[in-house]
Image 1 (cartoon, rainbow, N blue to C red):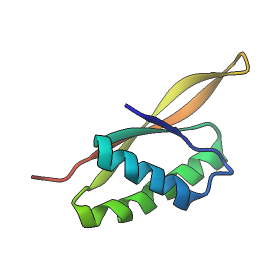
Image 2: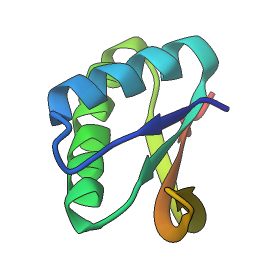
Image 3: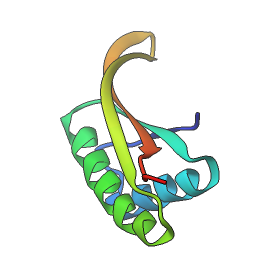
Image 4: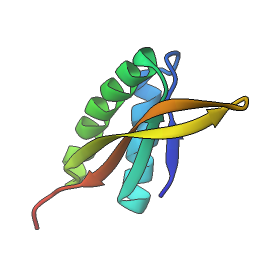
Amino acid sequence: MEILKVSANSAPNLSAGAIANVMRRDGECEVQTIGAGATNQAVKAIAIARGYLAPVGINLACSPLFGKVELDGVEKTAIRFICFDCAEE
């Protein structure tokens, strides 16, 4: 599963485009954030991506969970959003 990293400085529209492209191609992706600002931008991006994907029949949903990542030798807590298509066939 492709991991897309979103920072506090990420533009939600650009992140949404990346999420939508991966969802169209693979049907799933993971969005990873560290910190409140990054999580805020990721939630906005996921909401925007839902709008991009709805016209093509993809009902984007996500499941949030905690994860650990190592940055510069320091372990940090990350928020991970597992994104998937929950469209009913």
